[in-house]
Image (cartoon, rainbow, N blue to C red; front, side):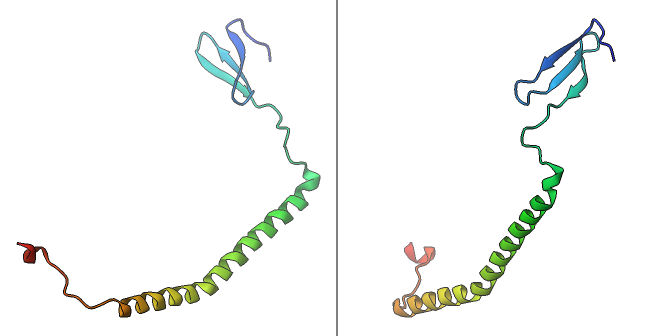
Amino acid sequence: MGRLRTEFEVTCPCCQSTLVIDEGLKRVLRHVVPERADKPVLDEAQRILAEEQARREALFEQSVQAERTRGDVLSRRFEDALKQARDEPISKPTRDFDLD
């Protein structure tokens, strides 16, 4: 496809893609994305999927372990708070009304 005289190409400084802009219309006509250097190869797709599945399984196992020990942690915190409450002396709370 040929270019008109009113069209010009600009390279994006951020993503290095090529923009074809029409000066008369003041619009982007085409956007050409450059090839990524880290583009995955289809031959490695099985390996990539297996790695992602292993990562998800590890995260799931970690969350299961956290849920199993959650009850122990909560009961320990409750026992500590109960012990602290027993050790504190019982006092009458002050109210704003009593301060006048």
